[in-house]
Image (cartoon, rainbow, N blue to C red):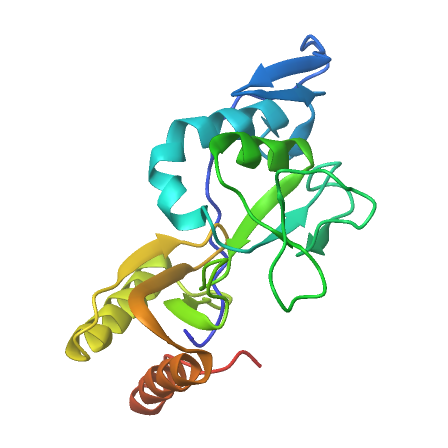
Length: 228
């Protein structure tokens, strides 16, 4: 929604993987056996597979309510960000047994979902660097219970501008008697998340489009309702 997308660089303090570092063949995190735990997933900051797994362990109590029992879409980069990455929404047909596989009525493919910390660590083992949740639960895919306003800043836009956009979005939602919270998207922007009791998807989409269009109409120099 903000008019242009902003290059925000998060400086992460992490241990660097260098040639002098001792190579590790395996490590156990939670109840999952990690192979090649010292594999560097984010080359620019030296974050390894083991680092990512340990991070999820540390934040699991906060993360659990947002990911459990929801269909997931993941971005997998088995070789890290320097290698090939691909988007995945379904478990491969040749994997017959997996705690990540969840059958859904009326769906041709089984979806990916997690129930416990071990499942998330298993995603780390598979090279999943991004975890995206659907705004519905496994037992009610046709009911939207979470609306997300994805504020993607453009080139040259400062952090204060994207924070102001998130604040304005929350104020507009408050005027509609809806409570929301901000969540860092892991990229360059901010997500404004609105938990709701449940709505038809078409109704939820029409409502979110109305809010976005109003912001773009009121401040065309600041916002676009669609990325172009």
